[in-house]
Every structure is written in structure tokens, then in C-alpha cells.
Length: 195
Image 1 (cartoon, rainbow, N blue to C red):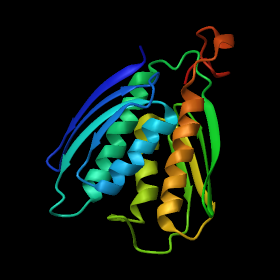
Image 2 (image 1 turned 90 degrees about the horizontal axis):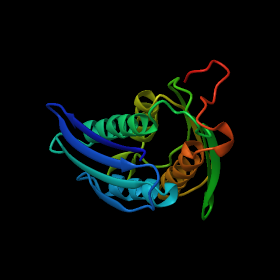
Image 3 (image 1 turned 90 degrees about the vertical axis):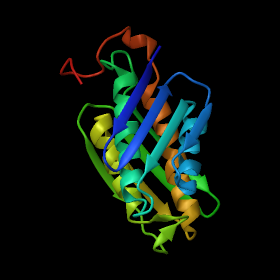
Image 4 (image 1 turned 180 degrees about the vertical axis):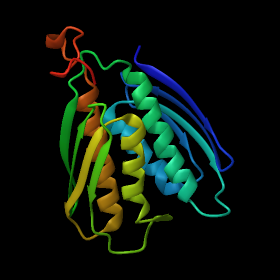
């Protein structure tokens, strides 16, 4: 079973995550931030990951700490569930349309954290999340998941659609990259012999 149980507790947030990479999209998500819950449900459903994520944060200040720490804990969960990464496909990408919007995400579960996020937002907030936090969310995830993550909105007018397309593309790219490749027969998918 490629699963992980992560508990992250700071003075700002308390987060509990249960993740099954080989799931069916079952999810139970509560962060106190409605739009974030909505986006993370796309990760589970479109990535076919079983995900239980409960977060309590200092929302009386703002949503920043909760959004950031959820991304960090989620990256930890993927890293833990992947283990030594033997036999995985390793790379994946997806174009996801959402009405007038088209987004593309490519991931490489290489063990090397790096993120490039390209999106132009039309309003300061999407739902109740500052638009500037979406790049930070993906960057934080990339650090603790130890992956390359490139995400871009090619075009779009509606910020809700842009965010949703990004999260759907991210989910599908992660699903592809985390799949087991029977041709690898438990081998590390790298010329270095380690990821």
C-alpha cells in the first residue's frame, strides 16, 4: 500500500492528512477555507487519490498560514507515500480546459524540488484566497514533495476557472507520474540510480 499519515502541528496550524496514492478519489477535506477545500477535492477526484485532510489554522489573521502549511503537509504526504520511488512512471503532464481557460501542469517526481508557476490573475482574490497565494501553494508543495512542478495558465478570463483548471491539470499530472510502470520492475527511474 502506497499510503501516508502526516501530522503537522505549529503555533499557526494543525493539519492531519491520510493519503492513498492507489485510491478511487474518495475524499474528506476540511481546511476552514471553502475554496481551498473545493480545489483539493479536484486533486482527489481527478488524481484518483483517496485523501482525508483536516486543517485548523489561524484564520482570524488571514488564510496565508493555512494555505501554505496545507501545501507543505500535502507534499510531505506524497513524498512519504512514494517511498523510494522505485518503479514509478516519474513524469507526467496534463492540459486541462475549463470553459474559456486552458491550463497545463507538468511534474517530475525527481527528488529535486523546483517550481515555475505562470498565471495572470484578473482579480486580487479567487474565492477567499489571495490570487498571489496560488503560486506559493504549488511552490510549497514542490519543496516537500521533492518534485519539479511547472504550472501555467495559457489563457483564460475567469479566475475561478483558471484556478480550477490548474488544480485539475495538477491532479492528472500527479496521477500519471505516481503510476507504477511494470516495465521498470521495481527499478529507480533515473540514470543516477536514485531519486
